[in-house]
Image 1 (tube, rainbow, N blue to C red):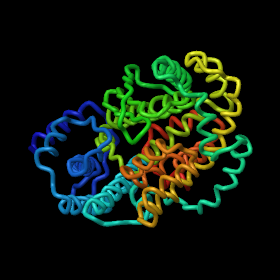
Image 2 (tube, rainbow, N blue to C red):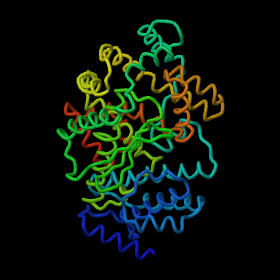
Image 3 (cartoon, one colour):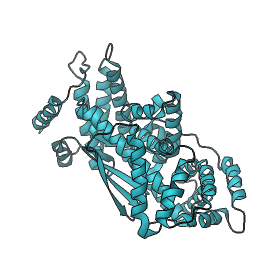
Image 4 (cartoon, one colour):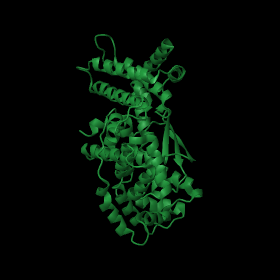
Length: 429
């Protein structure tokens, strides 16, 4: 089997012109380590369903992982061996991209080792876990820090009842009727794509399919298939507001996950033969960049009031909705965005067992203004993905700050990020 895998890799590598590998005195190389890294990730995926978010390398490698996956203790040893091999490889005098490649592999092997320790029973605090898996340590602010934002929202929505009830009642004016979801999403995604392709060069054959699904802990998901193709699913269990059509069209599609994965495949797997990028481990620094750039991509594609203007001109008519209070909806959206990190503090207390499920759901309702069904769905997401939640709000803010430091052409900086092995640690420097 090892001979078969090596032969397949050589066939893939023959179609690419990668930079010269960086060998050490023992003859090891980043290419060889990358092959074994892919095997490690695929085998972890056999021990934890959902851990491998995407894979588009040789099918035989995946079949080998399914046929004979190592045990978790053996995989922990395998990760330690990869770390030792990476540390032994010298990149002195190597191209900048090769130096970054070694750094990228080290960070991702470290995250894989942390996930394996969690699978073996190790527990970490919320912040420790987030840092170990995603490479960034979140700040956990007291919930009282968000009370001033709630007061501003309260002033915009005066009247009887709880603030959450008033907020939900106001937003109900902007629910897309179920029989109009398809045309509204089609229009939103087409606009997200049009704004992206004017500024970022995409593979000529890129495309995706979309379906509405139910009974999921998330609101949308991109399953990258390889070959510049994605399958995007939208959860229609709960009411979907007009702005979410834009949000999900950008986040899951353009310039979000679909574009990110397509550019990584083109830049690294197709053009350089760097096989480590053919696999996407969900609990890794890659997700911080992926989710952060996907969320920032909404602001990039629809800066300022352009999202509200597009809703008013295109989406409201398609949905049959009244646009008269669209500006107040946008104002509320800007305020609720400032509440995003309250969720981290709640998740920290809940996952550590300091508060129970009922209290966590109540606090999510209060500090994210989610009605009970939506708060329950979000708590289900936290149960499933734990500290992964930092990748959205904190990831967006870190990506935005990095992009804006690069100069006035934000689209150019975004394309650089999406087609790179830049790590979260690089973004915060």
